[in-house]
Image (cartoon, rainbow, N blue to C red):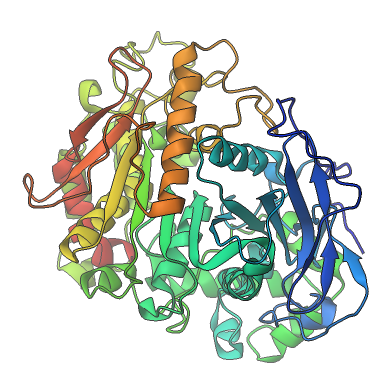
Length: 588
């Protein structure tokens, strides 16, 4: 049964107006026969594409198998089943769920392809993994409409097949604590993703795709999910993908809470809080807790998560799917050796820095900044490094000084020196730029740079970027913040799914850049190289022998002069400190 947890309306397919690629019309719906049976989809004459939506890739997730690893489909059928509607999102909590139906039964996959393909077409395949903090989001989100990027691939003469899917979220996908570990039900959401990739491997040929030409791509926690698959099972290569693209979130499976994977007390307390707020309270601390939660009414679990304010559920170090600390896997090259295209946005920190001061307030003083640092370093820092928390705080304070000209956003992007008279100062804080620089590096940049260096040292191709565009609807003080490159990648010029179209009231340079970025991504899906005549500047492979141990990256920009190539050496000392101490300070 479908459940609506937030203000919701029916999910529908939304397509923007565009010139059809051809005038082909289908008299009957397109069909495809996979391992289990035959599906009929939808043909779009407008785009000359076929859509196969809401295909199950796992057995139905009902109450009896809640908090269990998903199982592959084990039934076949002779009739033709419809695949014509996007599936409900998995149960989640947050703004990305507004307007979408939600259900525990949510493990479905979607395929969008150019029309007229058959099982010998052998096209490259791009598999999108949505973001949302691992606690919200879904494949029906209209911002992730695959139509436009598939259309662009056809227009540039390198057609692709595109895929998206759902995976379980929040507590339903990421239980942790000793009970979950002993029951073997940690990182279920990542395991759902793995099962979906196995489904693609087994069935995508029927849609005209090539199982040996699959690239996975995602943004934010979707990028973290891409990273999770690359590092899964200590880097075991199951032949599920030949390339990976990660926007703002690559470098290992990084838990974003104090102490990281060392914070087992945090994980256990979160699990116990969930159990205590249901009718399973008497089972706290026993193996029966998992069984009880599986059979508890959904409303109880939903209330425990949604009302008691339990924090988002992070991944767990289970020595199985997440086999080791990211720092160790990077150092030992325990990852799938495939080419990658990775990057982040210049001002990621503006989405994660504000509110880091005492009482979730702004950072105004050095003491406020020290407080913010204390919330990201490990509680056992003294024992693991021989330094006190105060010493670590001092070192980070020196590496991230209160100098606005080197903070985030840059004075070029936002030419305002923050003072007590600055508009919205009560929300920003006097050390706004300082905390943003640290937050962006801690959450995204240092791990990305660490991965770029590791790939280069391993002799693998890595293409690195920095997105430096402030889009329409984003405050100038927020600048090139988190998520803003997504509309460019999907070539979503109409702003489908956005409250404010990122391209409205912008110059042609924005649309031209979107075409360039989308084309570069498509090129990588097709050839594992983003370069072509349509992509400028030429994008170099990251090479650590070129300068001071770092390589070069492309900076995507609409400023005078356009995009350019630079050495990846911004905030070098601070990020080296974060990388060198990732294991001891952050449990990563």
